[in-house]
Length: 575
Image 1 (cartoon, rainbow, N blue to C red):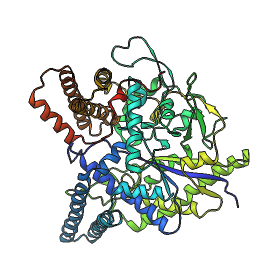
Image 2: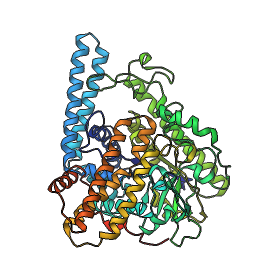
Image 3: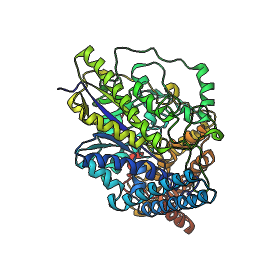
Image 4: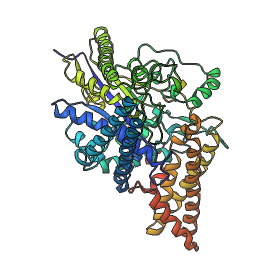
């Protein structure tokens, strides 16, 4: 029997640079949580399936800034310490619950002890060579594809200079190639945000005269990226349903104000998320780049905490935690229940729901691919992109759901698991489309990242981008290693400043103080390094304390060893 179509999960793993920038409640423990609750459980699912003789063909996006952190020497010790803390907290919870005569809660604490002990043991033994090496091995064996993202997840459409977009893309390719042994062929654009070629003016600050800017896909094409992921509303129009609105109250309030002036595009029914398309900005000369489109029907089933599987009352509740230790002992109960109404978690009931959800998800995939196959006679694709952290971190049972779906599809002769590159090679695009500017945020535009709460951040970013370009043009060809050292660290601080995470956290009122402090910190570090570079480059005396400051910056923000300052000077292919 020939397959009626293909399916791929596209999981986007990302965290901003948090090493050496705090630990708890904001900082390195974000990385520890994600690794222990999502990355290792996903590796376990993939490795188990391969050992069963199945090939999961997952498309795994790991951002360069996250990859750098997982490859950093300090990460292993940080995660080991964190896991020991979680294990000991579970042991203490068991003792505390038993003293009060609560056997059910004590049993759940024992569950957490076993869970984190297994994660620790797998980290030490099964993935003893490191998480980067473990993902790389699965790719080398042909079981997954690893794609990249902007270097620090910079929000590309709002960056004010083409050299900034260029640096984000080039650094991404360089880091990915070093850590995963091959250049990436696909990219998850940060926040799925895209801008075509057009006459552009900065949305904040002194706008000046609009100037022609290259389309985002042109930078991808120039650097060997063959495809990227978009939201269905960007392809076809209609309502853009944001991924995060239901999880953050701050975003709901922003949307209420923004939506009063929002008009969605009419749906273009001739375009379909079942096909890959080439994207090409008008008047651009580079090769077109393909796009795969998020499937809206299956997407809602996992993204939505209210209408999707994670909202099932039997699943573990994310929000209610027991302190000290932070373990969770309660179930969702119902969509409307507050923390006081949450009932105790029952693992057996939750486990019984996973097969039903996996069956339903696979049935949806088959229904959509069948309809497309019957209408066109062609084999299409269902592309299901999600933040990786949905599986395990936000939704504890998510990795087991992932396992169930991948196993069912791998064993179903009507369906074929694939990766982004594999599908495009087997079913090359035949149509070229133009895409509007937008993202996968609610409403499909930029308001989550550019609004009254974040406008000030872009003013600083734009000034620093201009200053970096001037420095790179003036001193980028220097042979003086000390000057190059300053310039490269200034480039790193600018890339970290550009991370879209800061605006998102500010808008979502989630770790807002931390995000504002981090943004200001990188801005001030960049400014100080830029001043130092100019003084030294002009042959003037630099205070000894500035050299100490440079070394502190290098030790704290230790990433992107191959950064090339010339990326910030001029675009490689002029507009």
